[in-house]
Amino acid sequence: MKPIDHYSYQCGVIDCFNEMLRAGLKRIALSHPASSAGERDVLIPFSREICQKYGTHFYVEDQPLLTDLFPISLNLGKFHLIYWKEEADLAEYLKIKADKERLILQKAYTGESRRQIARRFGLLLSYPATGIDRLILENLEPEQI
Image 1 (tube, rainbow, N blue to C red):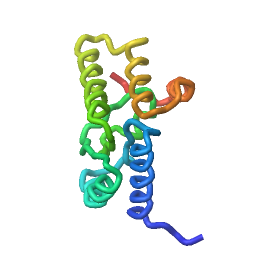
Image 2 (cartoon, rainbow, N blue to C red):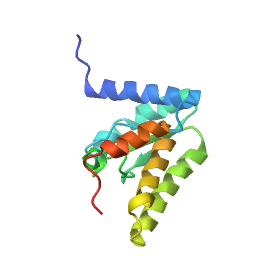
Image 3 (cartoon, rainbow, N blue to C red):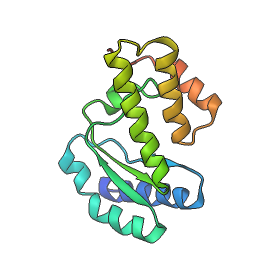
Image 4 (tube, helix red, strand yellow):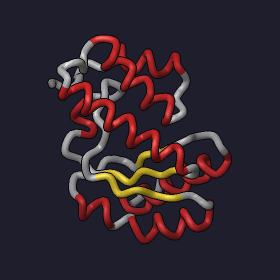
């Protein structure tokens, strides 16, 4: 098999996710986590081009939403591009982030409220409810607050 360089692989993922957004199969999509802003930013010119092609948009995310949907090490300190088609979906992402921060400040980011933040994020990613529940249940590396 011919080797695929990292940049080309990332561009393929971005193209695929944006095609899914255009088709209405996903509400938002995340780039793969990048270890640095510079590593992520290399993808911005391609993202502009692909978003223009599919009628989608991207958002530069330096502080990703961390939930129990994914192991904390996957996204803590990482950098992403978030792709969306409908403005309401980006607004919902930002609302979930704000709701989580409010719950943390109120010392109420526990139990069911914590689970609901992860569920809302999973639904925004267009994951099925059963898949969201499984990911939360199987996550052995939750965020420590």
